[in-house]
Amino acid sequence: MIIAVDGPAAAGKGTLARRLAQHFGLPYLDTGLLYRAVGRRVLDAGADPADPVAAEAAARALTPADLDRPDLRDEAAAQAASAVAAIPAVRAALLEFQRRFGRERGAVLDGRDIGTVVFPDADAKLFVTARPEVRAARRQRELAGRGIAADPAAVLADLLRRDAQDAGRSVAPLRQAEDALLLDTSDLDPDAAFAAALALLRARLPGLSDSA
Ligand code: DC
Image 1 (tube, rainbow, N blue to C red):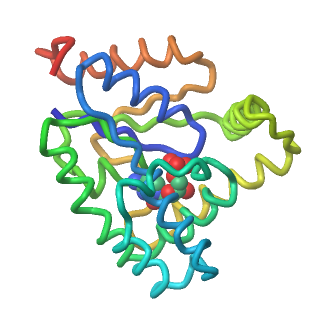
Image 2: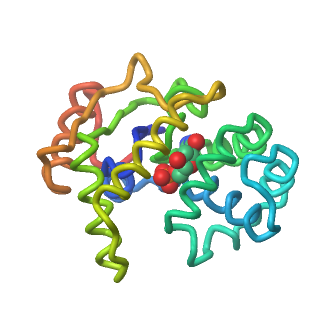
């Protein structure tokens, strides 16, 4: 079984996808980490993440150890990820890995193009979103939890810039697949979002049991 979870930054996709994977006994892949790791490699090389040659080389050189780097969650990695993610050769280089991961034992994958490009025939697709101010507040709390003080207006501006770049690119842009179930988590805590997602999935997949 493949469950695709897409949506903009800080909408709660990761928390939700991880819980769904645990609930159904499926492997989980955070595909944003792949793009973040490519972005980090390009920055390490002193190159511009928007440079197609440098970015493709970084994507082709990616190893599993890159995904364990401790510096993939910060804003520099996020912006670099969004830049490399607009380059078709980078997406092509990462596509096969994502498909192989999902095909092995089924999976819950979260990202921007899982339901539209990576697994267009996924068993179920969720498009998870929330109001920008809510997403920015969540991101700020997450940063605070890591001891990083951030200006709320700057956090919101960073999120909106990244969403615009992800939705505006020509290859695999962020968008809701036609057959994706929309889940707005603006007024939901993680438990309520999980319950709402389960209800949507059960309605979409009537014989769904609690393990895949
Ligand atoms: O989910 P995230 O914030 O970790 O993703 C970081 C960036 O990677 C995001 O701004 C766009 C890109 N990305 C993508 O283009 N496609 C995916 N499936 C996942 C992430």
